[in-house]
Amino acid sequence: MIPIRDTTPSKNVPMVNNLLIAVNVVVFVIQFMQGPAINRFIFTYGLVPARYMVEGYAEYYQISFFQQVFSWLSFMFLHGGFLHILGNMWSLYIFGDNVEDHLGPVRYLAFYLLCGVASGLSHLILNAQSTAPTIGASGAIAGVMGAYFLLHPKSRILTLIPIIFIPWFVEIPAFFFLGVWFLMQFLSATASGGTAGGIAWWAHIGGFIFGMIFLKIFDVLPGTGVTSQIRRVTAKKHTHRLQMARPDAAEPSADIHATISVSPYEALVGARKIVNVPSGLQRRIYRVNVPPGITANQILRLKGAGRQLRDGGRGDLLLRVIIQ
Image (cartoon, rainbow, N blue to C red; front, side):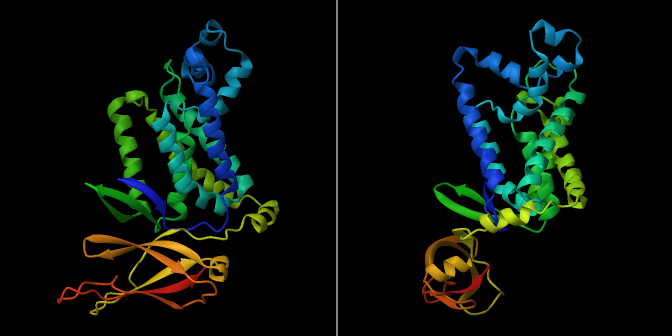
């Protein structure tokens, strides 16, 4: 299963979330420019529990006080390979925009970094003697997922399930998707002692739990007014291009009545969307052109995109336009 996106659109461009992704990519490039010195680089700027918990360990490997402190920040921007950073950044892309939308860019940055530090602390406490460097944004992203779990439990995760060569899109409830993810982390941690395969399971668990705690704390802190000023600039002009056609109700007719979302800007200038249409156990994908000047509740008709008739023909797909 490959998560594509969530179905809860953010209202603003996730400026900080995009910046975090960019910084992770840049650091990843710098990391692999180290050549033969890459292992030393990871050991120096990764989080090694023994350097803090075993007396004389840091001095033996000539780790300075600055490097000891800086590692609590730098470890969450290092990654072990292309698939590692790809999976982390994709998860951050899917869940981070909605959490930033809720907290605002400034508080979201603080939230993300605190989750990363808390995840590292969780790993250090439960693996105090470990000499293996802990790296990756997984703990911080787990915190973002924990916050998303509380903010949007009824949202759905659009997931691609490739069946041979046929793409099949399904929507999995967010509370189920994230609940199963957390359960798998816990089972893996308890079964392996916390670090099987080089994965810091307790960092994931700690990040997720602290993400929920930090969200509650940040929600009661007073705002500074900066967020409202930034949101005037970052308000989104476009909705998701890929959309699921959710039937409004089960009807006996062959026509499918569903909705499609566009922004006020798209309603004015027009847009192109990709609509995924349920048809029994199958999913059919159509390209939809939204004409300029469309109004709310106007109907777009796609002929032959509805339910199959007994004579072999098909009904139509009637998309009601919602302007968000």
